Image (cartoon, rainbow, N blue to C red; front, side):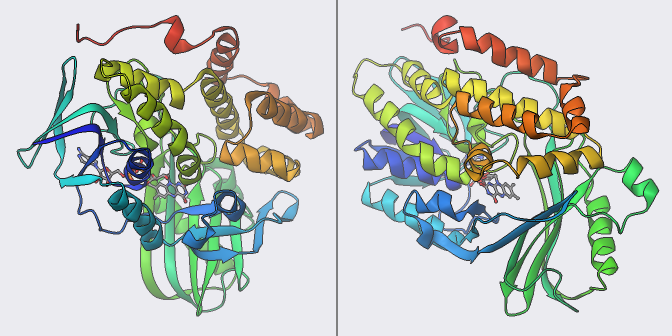
Length: 430
Ligand SMILES: Cc1cc2nc3c(=O)[nH]c(=O)nc-3n(C[C@H](O)[C@H](O)[C@H](O)COP(=O)(O)OP(=O)(O)OC[C@H]3O[C@@H](n4cnc5c(N)ncnc54)[C@H](O)[C@@H]3O)c2cc1C
């Protein structure tokens, strides 16, 4: 039977990254993986290159584009910033090697149940194993096995329909990455007025292979794959481009507005399970790479107290992941996204033109969640100041949930720490 300091559930990016970071700090780590450990992760992960440069990890990229553009209301925007896609095999092997060096003991099976006593959390698996640990870190993804979340309304999803393949003519310029192409002249007036705005995310993979993906912003209910597929073909047809060979079709859907976790539960978490997906941009891998060391250090320090019960260690982890500054920013991002979700196409394009005309340090910091709360507020105030009047008017309307989100942000300004203020203990009495 495995008995370790920290048990990580899941071997996706989050599980692998946090297991490696804990092992690097001398923590005895066990891992539980539902899928074979070396099975290549299915998703394609993109990231702005400078985020990896700051971490010294650019060698993990499989593709990189210098020519990165978007199209909003005013036409082409050159981002002046390189974007890359991870080579998933390299990314995975990088952290597997660290896990191996740190002695992480992986077990295969699906976690089915968890119980806690004063000393250990005990996880049962479909393989009939019992795994014991002083703290469990749930990294089982968007729909986590053990993490409980606060009830915070309807979840919005981003959906996308994409094709990797050959085309009758280049669908985007050779060697180009198109971050968001919101041009919609190919749609009828009725389609533009009655259907949600969508954009093209596309790139040249080289050797005449391109990836084109029609993508929605976060929407509740999600935009259907049928609509996205139709839109993609309409967009290509308007450019006189047809698909000549399909290598792969991608239909992806993922939640953008995951509710915050319950910060008092006796299980810690990381990655999508910990609601770390950026509510406005959907990105998370960069954040996991930047934040794993802080979380691992907090857990390693908490483990040094031999009397610390699982709930106490988990609480330290939640405090590190969702400290008051992070919580404040969460509500601001959600507030920003809520605004976007209500804008019509014209206002949305104005908003994006304005957002990407901010200094790069502000828009890049916003998208990567690298700004402090005052910096984030400053970026939002600046956006408001330079926005055209029609956009300002749109930003000042509060027709829905955004009022609540702003209120949550304001009320947190006066609270010291949500964990300290409403400190609850777990159900286990020790
Ligand atoms: C299609 C798609 C594209 C994305 N693109 C990007 C991007 O370009 N850039 C970016 O930064 N982010 C992106 N994201 C967001 C985010 O980075 C990913 O969702 C990422 O995969 C989340 O990592 P994770 O490890 O938390 O969860 P997952 O990748 O979902 O991994 C969870 C793991 O836990 C395992 N598991 C689940 N239940 C159990 C159980 N009971 N017991 C044991 N193991 C279990 C699963 O088998 C899986 O291996 C994307 C998400 C999706 C869905």
